[in-house]
Length: 299
Image 1 (cartoon, helix red, strand yellow):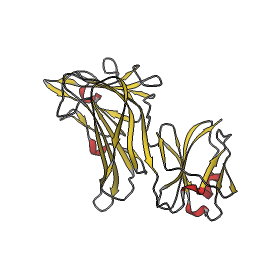
Image 2: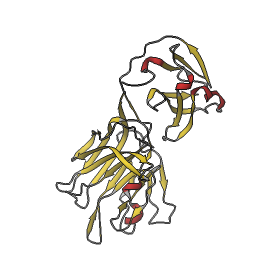
Image 3: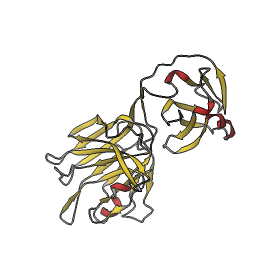
Image 4: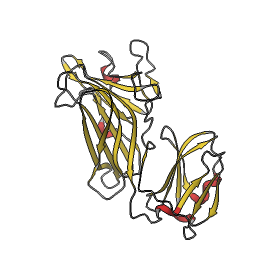
C-alpha cells in the first residue's frame, strides 16, 4: 500500500483545519430510532440526542434541510416537558440518558481523539425565543488509570446568539495540562441554562477542528509527505534520510471518523489496499504527535 522514496524535502505547515476526529461532522448521515410512529425520530449517526427522554412530548433533535452546505443540518429545539423547559442536546458518542434531567449523561459522551486543537469551528443558525442563546461546549479528556476516570485536560464554550442565516462560530480551547487527550466530547444545546426559553431552535452544520502544530515533534513536520492524491490505493511517501521507520505510526480514518488502520509505518503494506473512497491519513511520532495529516481520495 505504501511505497517509500528517500528524498530531502522541506514542507512548511504550521496549522490545519480538518474534520477528522469529529464523527459525521457535516450532519449528512442519520440513524432512525427503530420505533413506530410517532416515535420514529432520527438523530445524527455517531451522535446521541435526548430524543428518547422527550419523545412523549416531542423530539428535540431532528434532520433539517435548512443547512449551510450539503443536504442536511442538525436542528436542536427547546421543548416544554410537564411545565419544565428542556434544552435539546446532541453530543458525539453513545452516552446514556438521564431521565431525571431529560438529558444525556455528559460524563459518558465522547469519541476517540488524540490531537490538541486550538479551537472547534462550525456554522450555526439560531432562532431565539426571547433573549435565549444556544450553547456549544468542548471537552478534551484523557483516561486516568489511577482513578479509573477520565480527566478533563481541555475545555471551551461559546454562546450562540440569534442569527437568521448560517454564521461561523468558534469554540477556543483552554488547556490545564501538557498531555494529549484520548477523546473529545462536543455538546450543542438549543438553550443556555441561564437563558432557557421554550421554542428556541439551533441548527449546526460543517463542524471542523483547527489545529496548531506542536513545535516539539520528535520527527519534524518537514520530514514526510504523502502522494499521489488521488491514489489508486498505492500510496508513496517521501521523507528525510535520517527518519527511521520505527519512529512512526500511521492511522487511517474514513469520512465518519472511524479508525480503520493503526499500525507502525513499516507494517502498513501488510494491510489490505484501501477500497475506493475518501480517507484521512495521519502519520505520528513516538509521542503520538502528528507529523503529517493528509486527506486521501482512492479511486
